[in-house]
Amino acid sequence: MGSIIGAAVYPHPPIIIPTVGKGEEADAIRTIEAAKKAAEDIAKLKPSVIILISPHAPLFEDHIYISASEKLKGSFARFGAGQTRMEFDNHLSLAKDIANLASKRGISAGGLSSSLLRRYSISGDLDHGALVPLYFVTKVYSGFKLVHTGISGLSLNQHYSFGKCILEAVEQSNERALILASGDLSHRLKEDGPYGFHPSGPKFDNLVVNAIRKADVMSLVDIDYELCEQAGECGLRSFVVMFGALDGYEVEPEVYSYEGPFGVGYAIATLRVGNKTGEREFQEKILNRNKEKISEIRKSEDPYTALARLSLETYVKEGRIISVPEGLPEEMMANKAGVFVSLKKFGRLRGCIGTISATRKNISEEIIHNAISAGTRDPRFDPVEEDELADIVYSVDVLKEPEPIKSIDELDVKRYGVIVRSGYRTGLLLPNLEGVDTPEQQVEIALQKAGIRRGENYTMERFEVIRHH
Image (cartoon, rainbow, N blue to C red):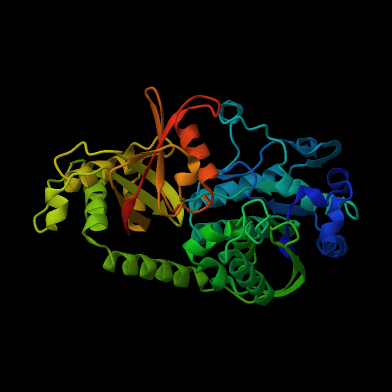
């Protein structure tokens, strides 16, 4: 019978690899020293297989990728250090068992056919989320096979379930397995960092590091979606999968280091595994808490978001477009305006469609049709299915009349959205979006949406919205 013999948390900044950093890695010396110490601990355990979860493996909304190549290899060529490369034997039978057990739990997981790899432009090489931790491990230990998995847009609860599938597959094998959860923390710790500063960055990092230190799984799976978005987090789902794979075991965590030298949070930790004490009760608590959150949101809906939800739910369940209900506020019946409807699921965008100016008789009809389009016709996503409806959160933006502007200096990302136009091409970006912190970013994204190159001539308009949650 196989067993999980330990676990570790690693960040994955390529700059801490000497051939990449070329001296700059010295700014993260605490992380490097801790990474070496954790690697030595792993070597002492002598795992026969390392199961590595990386947020930079191929990412899908409803499928967890598991590498299926016989050899797993990669290099730091993307970061100017192609000479630093690694190769591992894939534990194909264990990877297959994990995927099969996940399928039985209703979680799509596994490798992709060669045609799908080509379709999604996936090379199959190990990503830097895998390579950075493995660089340190292989400096002191090499007697293991590898299983390489990713994360997905599924809920934290489903990622915890996926971790339990890993545990079950290992216990059915004869392997001594170590779980290696790769993930940076917040990317918004400093003004001069890659994504600027947000107060939620340090708050998120403090919460996650303390949760790991105390093996407090509920703090991770019950985390606020908005906090995660504002912090620009990376590794949360990896950590949740890791804890799922430790379900029912006594664990003794030790955080070796935490720092954010480049505006990104890096934590190194190991979790020593003790006796198996039995099934935990986290998942029922998680499900109940998620239901409570959604229930609280539903209770606070205003007529705008309530109408958007009714419109999509009716269309998905019954295939029909509702008539405008009675009893709506006068302004929804008498006024016309462009409307954007946004859908989120587990804190992530699930669809967003809208109209720049009115195309229907009134705002109510605009909401009805755009809510249906957001859930079924956004080309970035598959249509919303009935079993997803209970987890969808809605927002409705009613656009005020746009006004032309001559300069980017007339924009304010919190107050104004922007419209860019060049000939028949038009791109729009709503105001006050997470991760969009400057007018330059705002215009760049709008241009990309319109298919307008930066050097082309284009006009700009700004607009305000009334946002309904």
